Image (cartoon, rainbow, N blue to C red):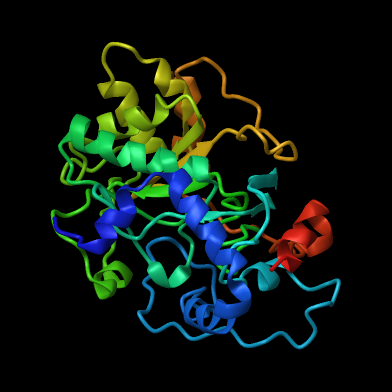
Length: 340
């Protein structure tokens, strides 16, 4: 696959790209107006309902309208972070917890690489800690070797400054989470239209009890295994039907299965979560998973119960949770938000 100049940028080291990005940030007084206007158009697509990774985007997203009172203490933090098209020009660090935090000095995963392509570009969510960028690039090459895939299709990572998102995820806030489609990258470069319109392939049967043999292939297990065997990976989230299939199909060393956890949804992508990286002293770690494979009938019983597969609406609808405000986030996130 010929990517021209983009391929050259993609294969450069994360450290080198980070250095280049820092130089660009220092030149912001000159570039600010043009660069911000361009990237703001790709920041986030407005939606009246929470978006999912499968929701289609637009090649011409509308910029978000300015906030009437951005200093309102009751304003949802997602409204603030969702309007930041560039990362904070600060030292790299993940701050807070995966579902309540932010990131300073984030780096973008190039939209085209020798072994990956980024999807849903209109969301501007291909940002993360440099360690996450390096992990994804490494894993994409491994997918070629262990599964014979042309490469990976990468979905949502984080916003330029992390934080809560206007649509979709509760986590993905500190630059350490990434969604990887279970649909292999095609052996060609996708157009921007295709990246917004293409849907990932569903891997779970309609009855939700097992994988769909029409879409799940033997090549899926080695890709997920390769991700789980990365020392920096804390957890991998998949649908319970996919976990069930992995338990059934895994041979030899099965220790990696302990990192693979069943989760709601996650039926056409898997979610990679990294450990807090060195230097991010204010990153809140998640307790490590148990050493159990999590493959027994008891381990999976809850996920295949009727209450989970066919939930009944509550008699009294629950009150909506109040949104996370800037005051709810770690104090450092205010600095991240206000930084140039």
